[in-house]
Length: 365
Image (cartoon, rainbow, N blue to C red; front, side, top):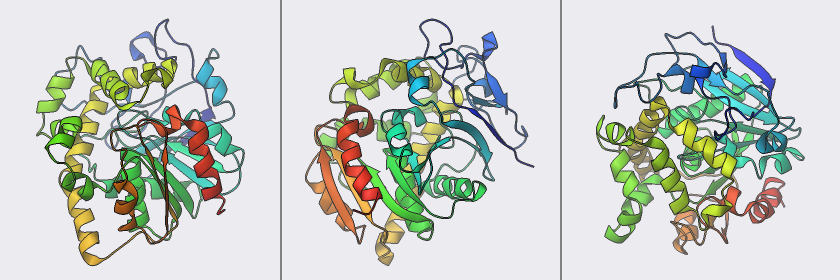
C-alpha cells in the first residue's frame, strides 16, 4: 500500500554554509515519509554519506527524504503556501510541491537540478494555475530505485500517475532539459492527458544525437560520459559530485551570477547523494539507447505532438541557434517558438521573459 503525505512547504536554514535544506541525516535534521523499503529506494537519507559509500555501487533501500518546516530562508519565503507531498505513483514515490487554483500546470526540472529551479516562476504561475513542481524519479526528494527503468517513457508514466493520484485529468506540462524530454514523451504517449506542452532549451533526443558533430560534441561531452557503462561515470563523479554539479551549471548559464546562491547550494548538496548520481547516469544511458529508439520509432511512424506546443531556448546557451524552431516543427503540429536572451537556465536566468512567453501560451492567447 502506498502513501501520500503532505506538509506545508519549508526550506530551512540548516547548518551554516549549507543549502538551507534539511539534508544531513547524520545530524538528524530530516523528516522522512517512510515507504516500503522493498519497493522504493530513498533520497539523500536513503544512502550512506558519500565518503562511506563505495563508488559505483547501488545503495540499499531507505526512506524518502523531504524538507520540513523550520527557520525562514529566502527560497522558503518565495515558496510560501506550496505544499510538500510524497505520492506513490505505482513503481516509485514522487515528491511534488503544489499550490494555486485553476488549470493544472506541471513544471519538470532538468539535470543536474531539482524542482527548486522553478523558484522564480512557480509563485507567479500559481496566481493563475494549479502548479505542480515534481522531482523526477532519481532526482531531488523522489525515490531512486536501483535497477529501475529510467527511460523517458517510464518517467512520463510517473507524471501521469501523479495526475491520477491527485485527481487531475489533463494538464499543461512545461519541461526544461531532461524534464522537457519527459514532457514531450508524455505528449506523445499520453495525448489525452497533456493539454499543452512547453519545452525549454532542447530538441528531441534522436535529433540531439544526430546533430552532434565533433564541435558540438565538445560542448555536450556529458552526454557521452554519463552514458558509459556502470560504474565508470559513478566512480569518477564520486570523487567530487558537488564540483561536477557546480561546473555544469556555471558553464551552461550565460552569467553564473544569475543562479541564486541558495539554490546552487541546494543542487550541489542534493547531487552529493550517490543514489542521485547513479540515477542520473541511468537517465543518460536511457537517452543513448531506449529513448533514441522510441523517438526513432515515432518519427518513422509519422507520430507527432498534436497539442499546442511552445519551444523556448536560450539564444546565448549551449543550444541557442535558429534550427530549434525548424527541428520542433517536424515534431509538433501546432507550434510557436521564441528565443530568450539568456543561457541554458531560462526560468532562473530570465524569469520575466520566460513568464512573458509562458503565461499567454498557457491561457490560450
